[in-house]
Length: 409
Image (cartoon, rainbow, N blue to C red; front, top):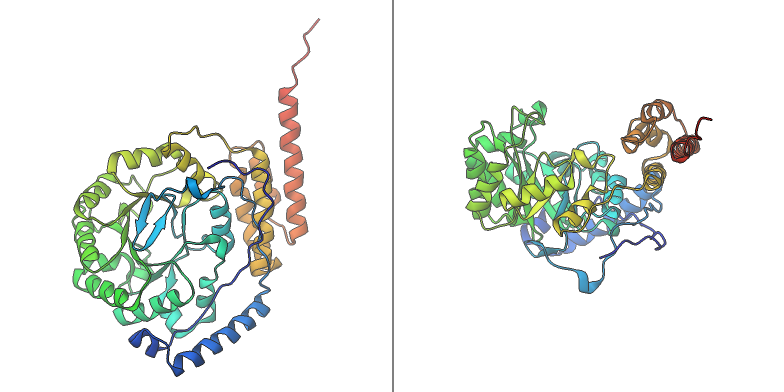
């Protein structure tokens, strides 16, 4: 493992497959005439979508994640999938789309998760929902998270996700958003162990790829529900559990109770991934040391700081962790903007970037001024120009500070 500062950027080809899977295939888990028709139709549908959405190359520079075959060490195994890096990007609604995942992967993340996707939307064939399945070879392995409450619908959605090429299917047991809970999905499933078991059995039966779940502490701070669901998950054939040890009422507030992760790790033999209150590489190391978890999942701390994953890897290996070069921040701003434009189009990408480019300026001089300057960008060229202007301001100040003040005579 070493820093790849000289390698040319590898092109990233999007091959997202919004593919419906017919019920016959789910039942038989094999190909029949009906499935062949479905396959050819889905291939045609994919070409149409590519034309509509202008799928092009999405490119990110990989400065942090050079690997050689002899350096690969299996640190965590989820079912049949061996991972050489224990770092995981959490599913973040509205954030972890394809360009963001590619950026994080290039910065050193071991396993990336999609945004949370509605099982009902997938089964209904909603074009907007199916687009969440867009993927690229460079982000592999990819875990796709689905949510819902009906075992049969979740099973059918899981088969669709598997057909799209996902490496892992994940079921959301932790979303505490009111409109999700009202449908019986997300953390509501943790109140109903029988339904949770039925969901897991149905989805496991529909899949050949690894199955994971992401849970919370539950509806109170005791952790009893988390332990019960973890036991049900292991018995039902789940291959790994990600644990965010906050209650439903906490949402993202307050402190995460890492002791819940420790208790689940002691209870089950499948891998346990810890999540919550990891904002630095040292936090991740502390979590591993205190809980014994097999992997660490980072969510909000990766926003604007995709390099946290390589820093965690270095810290876990006992290697020194260095600060990110400001130049790399400016490069990633441009790459993220360009990739988003290629993926969703110039106007929507620029609207989105008005709030997102400022993420990467945190800690740099005049960050507030830069955030204000990009709030009204309308074109890719305008965004690139604002980034270049800000870069000049930062470097001019750095040079001024480095110049010694002449002595007063």
